[in-house]
Image 1 (cartoon, rainbow, N blue to C red):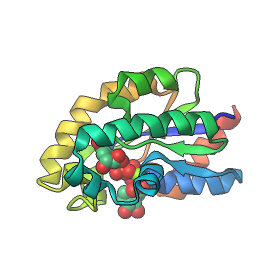
Image 2: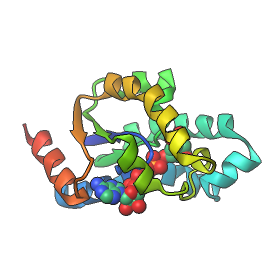
Image 3: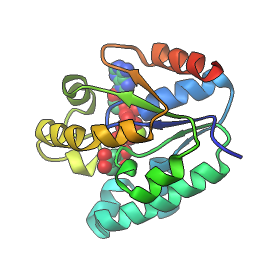
Length: 167
Ligand SMILES: Nc1ncnc2c1ncn2[C@@H]1O[C@H](COP(=O)(O)OP(=O)(O)OP(=O)(O)O)[C@@H](O)[C@H]1O
Ligand SMILES: O=C(O)C1=C[C@@H](O)[C@@H](O)[C@H](O)C1
Ligand SMILES: [Mg+2]
């Protein structure tokens, strides 16, 4: 089994929101590596960062990405930083991967003061700018298609992805 679509993008690009809408539109399951990690660890991501640190979270994330790619037959959303790991980027080769692109101004408005995202808990605007600059090339590297999300509704974005997948 393999996902019909893998979503990648920065925090606030809408992977979870658009992913849920897309899965509903296609009538398939929705999986999200962040939610899988929270379920398995039995605590929120912010607590994993506090108790065990980011490196441990990234280890859990590599396992969640591998499991998702192997067992999800629907829409699989990856955590915003999953593409930092070379192992994850290599695992994505051959899959339909959609990059939800977002510019700084929309991303900042959407994540507010972090919303439970530990990396954005302090100075979200500056941190998001750094993350976007660092990661844009990596999202582009793994993506088979890019969909712009700025100023657009999740339902409209999901419909565009569904049309792309039919091609
Ligand atoms: N296209 C959009 N327009 C307006 N708001 C949006 C859009 N997409 C998502 N949002 C809002 O932005 C916030 C972040 O969205 P979401 O959690 O789906 O992002 P994400 O990419 O999954 O982030 P993360 O990488 O942290 O998991 C949510 O409050 C959501 O309702
Ligand atoms: O951008 C990131 O590095 C992260 C994004 C979220 O999806 C979570 O995976 C976590 O908060 C880290
Ligand atoms: Mg998400």
